[in-house]
Image 1: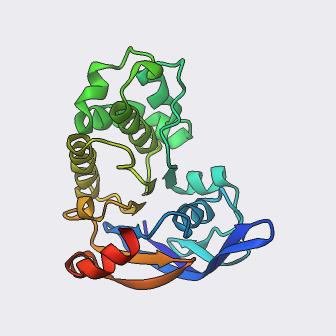
Image 2 (image 1 turned 30 degrees about the vertical axis):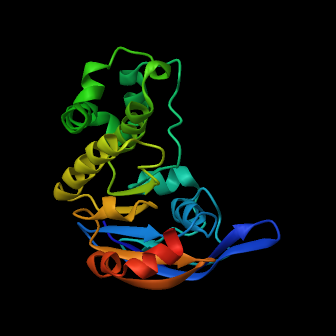
Length: 234
């Protein structure tokens, strides 16, 4: 699946957050959005996935403009959004949470294949499948959130801050799984303030400040510019 965003403007009552943002995610590619807190990264993902209605611009999935579509209709098109925070169904088991991600007919028909994939990526979830989600560690809840998204048979995966609040070893485990997802052919668009974790996953990166791009290009080039990253990410 290919994503093309052109001239996207979006925000909240009385306040425009995104000022004509454009980006592209090609088939099989992982693209990162970097930037300080409060400058529009989450708003951008919400506007792309239909959780927030854009004021202007185009959001094209394989050439079809889905800007302004309801979130469930965008998801049915194949774009799956894993929001910031874990948000599991606390009183459901790990297995039940994962199956909730396969609510679309195509995903439900392939739910066994989906479970096999998630348990291969996150063996800890396989071990804990009968446990209630509220009993999981923070890292396990993050794995569950990503796994539930993957159960939706994603043609393109959006991730908001997948490493937020996690210990370094858990971050590496999560990113190892995401690298495997990309190798499997699923394109990824993600926001993360931990730029170094993106190495080996993201092909390109965009640096966002105050709802507009400051810089874009190969991730390797941005990672070499430590002064730039320090100025914007601390």
